[in-house]
Picture (cartoon, rainbow, N blue to C red):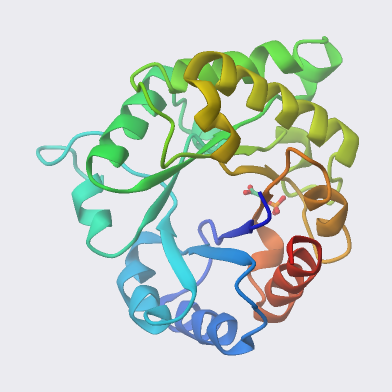
Length: 251
Ligand code: PGA
């Protein structure tokens, strides 16, 4: 795959006003030559406004989470159909959801199915904790998160996978690119074994302390098709620099 995918996860940051400024900033950087797919994921309340700002540009929009049911008595939740009105993608199974909100693989799997049914492309996140890695369980944990979260589907077309080791998220300590490649190679192999050749076209991303200085080390690896970026996506210039660096490798 020669196209890179760079996803900006804004997490619980930005007000409506600052989201608007950030979206305009990213849109107006115009650093892209078509070899990078750019997806930005603002908080729910800013989705509609950000979508309107980037509409007509090469930038697409995603939500950061979704509920698996399509409507009903689920106070505070947002359904796939609601998101599909304003976005094309949705992050599911981020480690912050798994850890802070006790989300299980089974629940995440229902979100994957519901998102696909609503026409959304899920960005499925998997990743081991430091404890798992130290105990030699990294591959086993990631493989089981992946396959359990995909248990309800027969075809991985339309899905993106992000490998985000918990110990690398927000720490400034990105994974060694060879470790990231090894883990994403493992993910690709598991996808191929279970879903066939289509696995080759599933964008597989690395996430965890990605910035403009290290992004090329990741996207040069054969099984790393892009990056999921948190902190460095909150500044238009630093996000644009990451996109530009990824474009140099992809192009
Ligand atoms: P980070 O976050 O780039 O700030 O480490 C990545 C993520 O959580 O998606």
